[in-house]
Image (cartoon, rainbow, N blue to C red; front, side, top):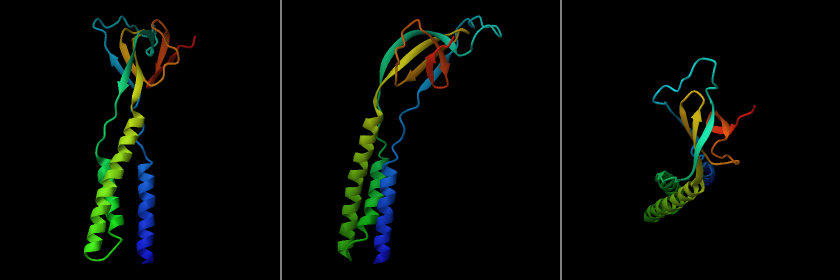
Length: 161
């Protein structure tokens, strides 16, 4: 009996820790495009990551529901439901746990996806070496077309002079 209660507590703790692990928002992205004429780059003359913002667009980011929350919820709910009753009562409790866990798991995943969705900014940057970079990030700290920027990893920053 104590073992069943300990298993139930362990499963509940595992379930709560797993459901709290929401996937992070999509990574901010940088996409480089080569200029058709090579851009006139010569060694040492240009900053590879420096450029000028040419356009700014606001884009919507939507996260989907994979169904993994429902599957995980069904498994956990079935294991917990299996701890109660005897005979056909245990089977009914297991089935109720599977259905209830699937509903709860799906709901948690949908809420997490909704929280990760929203609007972001897409910047088209003409780099000094002739390439183009498209940077998508969640914040716009006041960038405008014509601003000089530095493309740093997965976001842009004002160019320090």
